[in-house]
Image 1 (tube, rainbow, N blue to C red):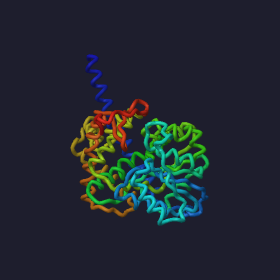
Image 2: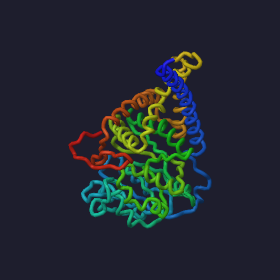
Image 3: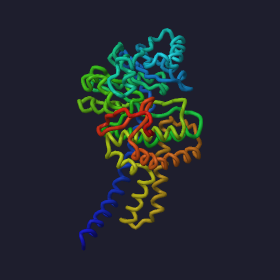
Image 4: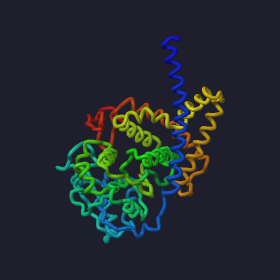
Amino acid sequence: MSWWWLSCLYFIEGLAAFGIGLEIALITMHFVSLIYSKMYMNKKPPELMKAEVEGVSILKPLKGVDPHLEDNLETFFEIDYPQYEILFCIQDEDDPAHEVVRRAMSKHPNIDAKIVTGGSNGKRQGVNPKINNLLPAYDIMKYNLFWICDSGIRVLPLTLRDLVSKMTDKVALVHAVPYTSNRKGFSSMVEKIYFGTQHTRVYIAAHVIGVVCMTGMSTLIRRDYFDKCTGGLGKLSQYIAEDYFMAKYISENGYKLALASYPACQNPGNYGIRSFVDRMTRWTILRIFMVPLAVILEPFSECFLCGLVFSWSCLHYFSWNMLVVFLYHVLVWFLFDHLLFRQLENGHLQMSKCDFLIAWFIRETLTPYIVLRALMNPTIKWRDGRYRLKCGGTVEEVEQDSHIV
């Protein structure tokens, strides 16, 4: 037998074994995420109200106004927590967000809140606009615990108590599973299903096994540990994905990350399929340059491609019908996703099973397009800037007429 034929045989056997191993690993991830979410997500422990209170500085980076901004900000004035301040970080003096914030502050004069500006005047340390916007507030905040929470997040009254309750001596950072609020329109369902199934499954499984996987939509941080690990917030301004490197440096220095019980509910007023695809493309580009191996394996973690490889492996090893195996695989995957989604929704679904099925199918089929789109161009747009990623996750700003995603 020639060397070429022998290589082909080894490749076929390896691919078949990979298909079986992949299916086992992903089904295990489904079980882990389901069990964890059932035990810990959306829970209100009896001791939550008795947890030790420590002052918290809330840093809210704002830029511009969307239709839901005022409602989202209102929830931060209604937090059930006795000692906190809100620092609204607005880079430009003429930003219309000023008016919205002042209106909210006038309704709640008893809450310690102020507007902090000047993020672009003398405080700029790198290309990351979010970090530069936060730096003036970071310099003047009162408390050791600080909570960075994006403008599009809507919180529950007990959200902050839950975050602080997870902050034990060895924990330097508490983050939340990204999710979305209920909004109108079919496009919102596609986004909600992504965050309530695939993203949550990977997010929880990574947390359980100790892999760094964090998005910085809602993050409570202990400043003394944080400064020791990173050298301060300004050191992260060289990265666009500052949240990933924040978690990475903290983990490498021996401190722990904890996961909140309440998810971070995104509630931006501007959304749609196009904006969802653009956002997922941007995230994929970031992963390509930070963890390239994950992007190579990522398509195989999706239902349809994984099902094709697994069903072929079953044909190879057991002579089972590929179509039957594939359909059973898709059915089991769909049921697991529906169960996880129900858990994040606390059992109160805001869409019909038919809508869920259609939106789930569209979300699953979008992944190959998003990956290919990300591979074609490493230049991204974020806020008002355009950036080109470099290996290692650092970035450089590019000219405004460059092609972007």
